[in-house]
Amino acid sequence: MSELKLKSSIRVKKYKSYKGTQGKIACNVLERNFKAEKPFQKWATDITEFRVKEKKLYLSPIIDLFNQEVISYELTDRPHFKGVMDMLETALKKIDKPTELVLHSDQGWHYQMLKYQKVLKQNGIIQSMSRKGNCLDNAVVENFFGTLKSELFYQKHYVSTEELKEDIHNYIEYFNKERIKLNLNGMSPIEYRAHYNKSITKFVQLFGASSVFINSKILYGFYTGQLFQAALSFFKKRSHRI
Image (cartoon, rainbow, N blue to C red; front, side, top):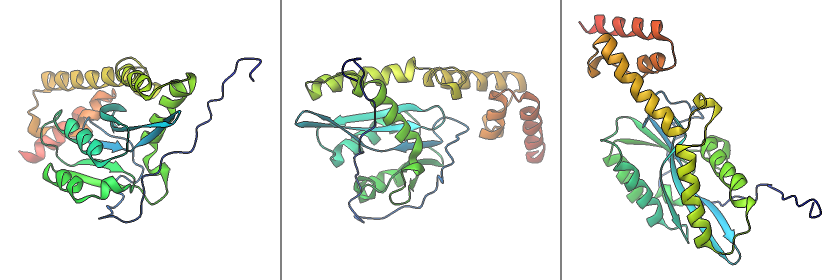
């Protein structure tokens, strides 16, 4: 491989934040249902580790399952609790008080802490946790980590964590704004969300629908091109209320 100048992109052993039961373990509310019908309906989070010579760097993001957008993230030299709380506080500033928003994670000790769970409860967020030792329960975040490492970290020889940190900042901006995905109809995460918001505006213009009559399933049907079914569902819902 060295003669051909090839470099392996095999994913190395992942960082494990599970340290046993440190607090309350939440139920697996998500249950691998990674499909979200609107933004800010389902979030997922985790922590991954990077090693650069004798130093380490930890990335803790929150990803929206609607469009796989990185909503917020923190980069720290240790997997400490403050980094997780800073990430959460940054994400919460981007939305109004959520309704039935689910935030999924593994059973890492950070997510078992009373302070973390209290902030979720105060903001109306439903906590969800993977089953012990089952990374597939948080597959979207795991896939993001794998993609980031394959496309960035394993392709360059880093000499410092500061260099890597800068590249991760740039990669996440690229991932959100430019990197297209087939399951997002060939759009980037931010483009997909903007297109969804535009569809909501169009729906209201067409049907004169007050937000009180609109639910996520109706809008999702309209957004995905199922106009007739969306309109029929809307008028059925409205007639029942009247």
